[in-house]
Image 1 (cartoon, rainbow over the protein chains, first blue to last red):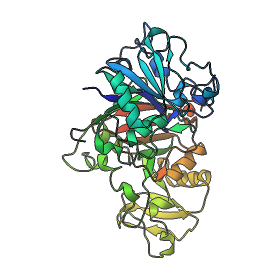
Image 2: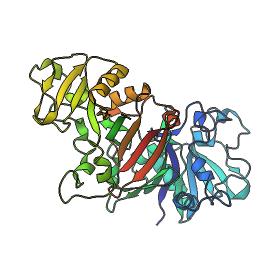
Image 3: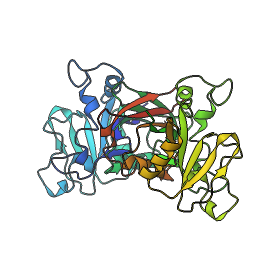
Image 4: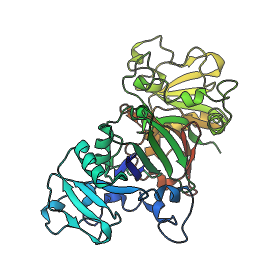
Length: 211
Length: 211
């Protein structure tokens, strides 16, 4: 069965998935790379890296994924839609290698990139976007790529089948929170926590049978 | 050396240490007992309970502690200071068994309870309260008992030597947050995370040498 899932989404101890002050050069604002350093230390990322639990989770990033949905803030800094040549914050050969559906109130024609990534632009609610992405995924899973606001919207709409969140032991203090407005979310999921020697805690939310 | 420490302070995944709507009958507001059920399942709490990592952390509650400081909201529901007969939310034989310093803008005469607990009332800033409690602790540690606002104030003032926080895998959505306004706190501490089979994640903050 094709799942809609969140994979390797990193937040701070105080719940921020993006820092404050996002710009073209600071994709995560004042957070810099600090939410993602745990990834760089794995052998999935680089030969010689750690092969422990961080690595195992990270490998689920593309395993069995046929499409991604991302929010406008992941595609680019605020105001990217005023730049007709903007092709995303992820370089000429983005790490997605599938269709990617960008949720935006400013849709534009699709952009084919190197390596199998094609950006499509949707002005759509979560349920409609989920249906379109699932059709494009060809029976594989759909990854919800973030940022925090779009994941929160999909959670609130009851559209998330599985979620992996990595909690990094830093306090960002400012930015965009993941958990706002989700009181009682745990009732629909089996929640497990796994702490890693790196200091990161991995949370998995798996939809309960019948929920 | 006498430490000022936080022990077994429980918060939700979204960072709330107290729920919303605190009343005389609902000491933690809409959170009810949900932040503390992990404690009730230990053998420290009840014979036949679990003896794993939750139990080990819980046993540090009174080990080597000579005094507690608590916020007004832990001593009672909003408005307790209008009740001259109020003797705290912890019964005739409170579980502290030491001097307890209640921070309040409405100080009253000290109250001696059964079992060694004496409540003293201080209208004082964190640094002054810490000094008074440390003197009373007779060389033992001072526990910061909560709620979240007073722990936050002591952290912001740089007065906390060691902190144990238990993150419970529920989303309360509303209440009083622990982490607000503490950006960069991790720089002064060594932070470790330990996940328990109960689903709780234990965070320990130990002040770095020289910090």
